[in-house]
Image (cartoon, rainbow, N blue to C red; front, side):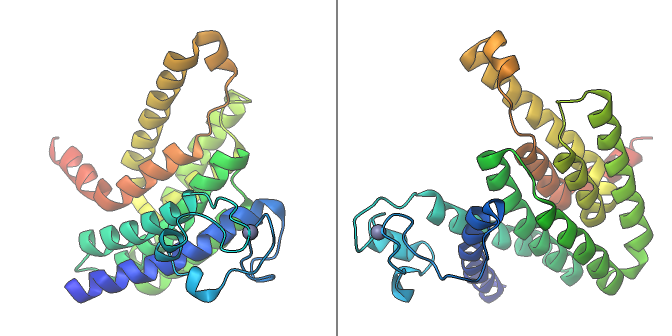
Length: 251
Ligand SMILES: [Zn+2]
């Protein structure tokens, strides 16, 4: 198991490095493959040995080797978070390969969703749609008996958020609606506690914002809901089934 966890960490760091590219370029409509990584200030291409996840940034002490422009700490943080979440998925889902694959896919979706929604207040269809299709295919191939549950949960979560978005325009965005549907595919029935955790965390963040800037300003501040939904989705995926089971057992 130790070897698998180390492999998951290294794989997650490498994917996290690519997700940094996705987070920066996807909302700007830029190609994900060309040109290679370069300094945003002086445009010098980043040398392969400086591009090693986390380590490269630490060696450069967060500065471009050519022009000395600061390189944001979010790059190594995104890499480290992706690596840590891959390890968490493998550790929690250890005896179930299909859940490991689905969990890795889910993390790979939720990390850029969180960062892009924080950056530009938008969840691109270019992320949610491919992961919706890939999720259906993965469940069909790896865990066929759960396919009906995944589809029903996807449609139900989408419908729940769709109604919320239409009932209160300007609150929930349609990017959130589509993300909720994708979470249903990956989580199955566990999407219910996942969405609940997402809503609670969204409310907590809203209260904190109002506490810091006041009610009037807080009402005007548009707090993105994607990060809360992503958090709920991840927790729901990891422990949601046991929450549903203990809830049903209480009857
Ligand atoms: Zn530079």
